[in-house]
Amino acid sequence: MKLARDTWLIFQRQFMLLARNPVWVFVGVFQPVMYLLLFAPLLKPALAPLGATTNAQTYRIFVPGLLVLLAIFGGLFQGFGLIAELRAGVIERSRVTPVSRFALLLGRSLRDVVSLLAQAVIITLLALAFGLRVQIGNLLLAYLLLALIALMTSTLSYGVALRVKSEDALAPLMNTVAQPVLLLSGILLPLAFAPSWLRRVADWNPFSWAVDGARALFAGHIGDDSVWQGLTVIGVIAVLAVVWAAREFARSVR
Image (tube, rainbow, N blue to C red; front, side):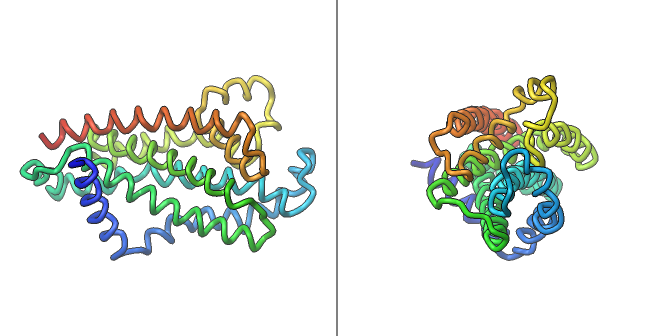
């Protein structure tokens, strides 16, 4: 009960800070919108071998990957704000409060999840104008998958930020992680186009499972194995990431 109350208090404070400066929500969504407007129209000929002969079919393949991209990159770079709080002494002052150390992490991460879901809704609404069609139940389950990805990546970013304590170290580290993750997840183009050795390597990338699951949901195949496999894989890793990052928070504020 105390954990839930403390988490809610931290979430309220963090969300209030975000609400005072909502421009960051739109800054975060700018690059995916550019992909949606300027890159997606080029894909219909490329995706024709997969049966994407209409705009609706093209966007059902592309938009899920784009949303996963948003959740990955939006979460991985949340640690920069935490480093600023470390430098300002905010985390240090948390030592004298009775707030749960786990809540300090979870409240921040839930704020990030809400922010990224808001951006995902904006992307989806724009894609509807270009012909995307998706069932509401499948869409909500896809948003659950995105929420787990955002929770996982943001907590990992916070944990790493507490370790390195420097933007100069965090930026190249996150970029080094994000680049192969992007290329081996089939976000921009399905891995069906990839050679067999590349698909085997991608099987070790949990985000490729998430992309497959999200695409199955957008295609209306809620019972597809990839949906539950993606939710399970991402859910387990998210729990492990939260536990590890919470320990880093406990070490930093005790």
